[in-house]
Image (cartoon, rainbow, N blue to C red):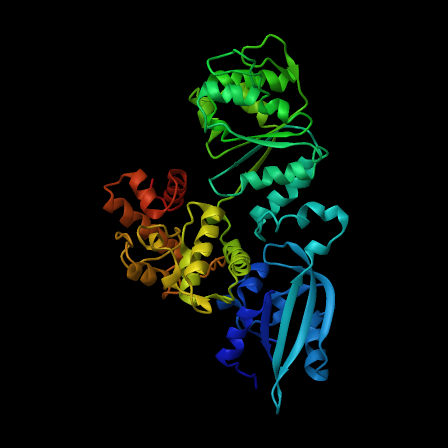
Length: 473
């Protein structure tokens, strides 16, 4: 007969700083901490009672649970090296630890700890080793595509265009590309193209000579010259004024420019990495961005997904920042309460990773207990509807504008990262519930798609796709 573990055993896992799970004496999963759920891609609610080998698939010789059975029978701990294959079919190098849990009378089960050894990989994996230090963390397929692109972009001098919402980490990607390139010994210069008016931005980029304009009392080198032989990172390139776009295109084509007020051209060897949160293709159609410059910048392109697009990474990011701020503030907070975890998993994070980081920093600062509760979260989370589209509410036309409403809504939230096609309520499918949610929101907003998409926490294109999917067009 399988042993049932007490809550003390189950909550113990949250204090383990590695992915960990508890199996009963039949090797079936009883509990997993947040890190194990993140690295495998499975929520505990969906795999409790499943044989551990079927969830943590590995090449460590654990066929038919042989390693589990050996540790249960002998009581000797086992550590093996190998790879695990997660739900998203990503292969992760690990050190796999198995120990028996027992009391005075009998074996209760197993404690399994999976140590990610990616950071100990060969020198050929040097780029990936830097991801955690740059806070580029994720096991989702979307982030794996980004990680796969970084080494390729580091081996060339071609221009790179990085797109993505605010707070997704575009600056960090640019820094990684430079750091792993042959230009790493030379400067990495960052310029925000939307922070200065046209005249000042031109002087900032290309420099000026003495007397070029009022206040120009000396010659000044621009960022292009300072970045010579290195990388110039032009963030918010979509905000660059059209007159400067012409001059930038000329520099990209000729590798030469004339400083403001100057007569002699200056030759430079600079790699350009540009980034924006704006839709440049649409700006080109509206004549707000030069088409020739767009294609000149868009030689290599990488798009950073928002947190809404990679929800399975949220728990892993939460734990990363919790450990970081625990260390910085000298605290020993072991995790989040179930309700706080649910609220954060359901939150839309319009500011993406930057906002998540700030939320955890706030919570660690104000928390006075061992676990962060919903009372330690920033109040603005509960002030307006910023819950992801998968949330089911009891009154779809109402906007959860209070803590009580958000908590009630979160209680019905399906497990993040698991799409089983049903809501868990009778025989009604999730598709039926989502369709009705859209209909109710459209009725509430008088058919206005803009306000409807805002209420649902979607973009207009996503609302259009959902309406088309459910035959509402």
